[in-house]
Image (cartoon, rainbow, N blue to C red; front, side, top):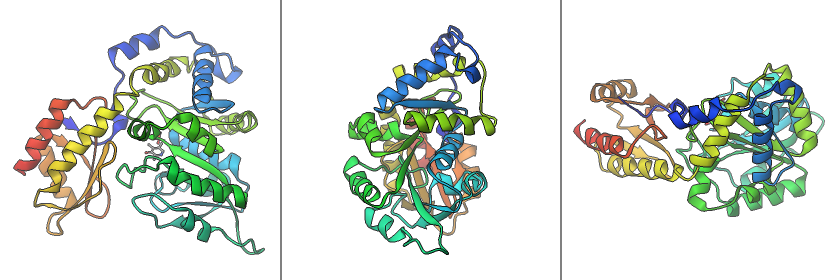
Length: 337
Ligand SMILES: *Cc1c(COP(=O)(O)O)cnc(C)c1O
């Protein structure tokens, strides 16, 4: 089976497992796991920030970010397709007691003008606009990404209006291998950044929240109250460390392979629309007379696994465990349907 369901499906490579087994560990709730501490320092430094916090998931790092950047009755601004709105169980309301203002962006991306017109004037009866969350790459936007030139005007606006900025950078490295931009410059534009290690980078578990020392100190408390304080987590941190050493550059291959699939889909009669393919995600809409679930079954019969992604669309994601020949095979099979 060629499994294009998600880049979260990657399994640790034998070398990663070997590296994990040799990790030095301690109790991270007492701050005594050397591998976790080393990873946190490494990632903080990479983004030019003071500190970072290792968490079990990207949902947790995003939820903690919303918590430490807001107060109850504040308002968060984001694109309507954002993971924090679509895929985190409404946690912004539950964990942080905040309202949300949604922007209908373009393939998951918003502009400074759209953000500006979403800021509330501050009447007593309104939640207070406090935080903007950008996602890079945009999952539901088909893997589209922001460049720093696009983020700069949003940053200037937020600075001017006193708004905080959080980046959901679950797949940030998939964008950075395309743009050549540095994590450090990205770090300078945001109060907090979340990055996932368990997507295309291939670690089994883990995300990091990055910010200044005081915010990360507070973040530790919220990680604990969410039940995310882990003990000998150094084995997992070691996998992330290995991924940062060996699996960042190769994300370019995933992006190129997704583009290959996109090129083939473009000309196939059952495809109604295809979102521009920029990174490792391919999203296409089927012609009206074809049902997504039927199409998924047809793919399965050919040996390809994928998920329906809403609105009669299908999503493919390329990743560490999808080889060049599997992509060639996929392209061939797609033409046979
Ligand atoms: C996967 C993902 C997350 C975090 O997901 P977890 O499964 O909780 O680690 C956050 N944001 C985006 C855009 C994602 O794709």
